[in-house]
Amino acid sequence: MTISQEVSAEQDLWPTLRRHTQARIGLGRAGTGLPTHHRLELQAAHAAARDAVHSPFEPEVVAEGLRGEPTVRVRSAAPDRLTYLQRPDLGRRLDPADRAHLPVGEWDVVFVVADGLSSRAVHEHGAAMVRATTALLPTTWQVAPVVLAEQARVALGDDVASAMGAEMVVVLIGERPGMSAADSLGAYLTYRPEPGVTTDADRNCLSNIRPPSGLTYEVAAGKLAGLMCRARELGATGVALKDDSDALRSI
Image (tube, rainbow, N blue to C red; front, side):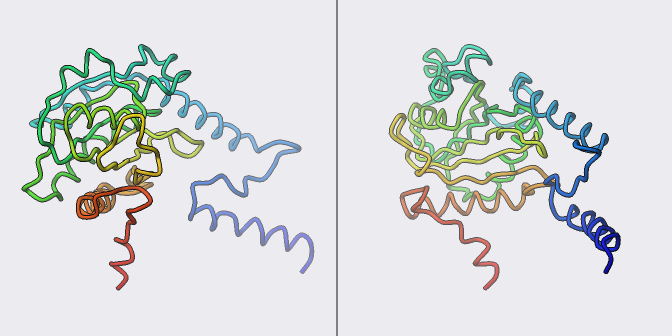
């Protein structure tokens, strides 16, 4: 095979590989840089990521998607977006004034829908994930009003669950945008969280919830509801709890 034939064969391979990943592979080059159309795509993706991080959270959008379900709105201790980005610690704590408005009860679980680093992801997928997951839970479970949290980090859910008396918390949060996805939703499950004590090792995470390019609501909700039921049986989440749903389906 000649060099030109090898180059041609390699060029023919890249489109096939790109169909199986959203990663930017085999983009080629123009001189010492990227071809113009790929460079423009990269700039557009970067702009979308910046917009996702800085766009304001609109709780009413999620509340509309949850129409008929009770909701409570809270903020973190971060007073604005710039402070939120610069002080992650403040995003993990509830605003004291909002804490007083949370309903206390013997809740089995509370869902916290939080803006995180992509309000777009929450607007597009948050309400649908709450509905899909609660539909799979046992009817005997006491589900708290959905908490809509602004300027929030994952650990804010610990503070919310503690204040409300919930046994476990599910935080649905906008994930950090990348160059291939600015609308990815993450779900973090924690059993009996303790503010300031619980660590990431105590949580289970489902990532890349964003149909049709990522996990669908049906698949993500099935995994999440299964983890929630097993967490209750085991009395733990995190490294002590494994998702064996795929293994069970293969038996």
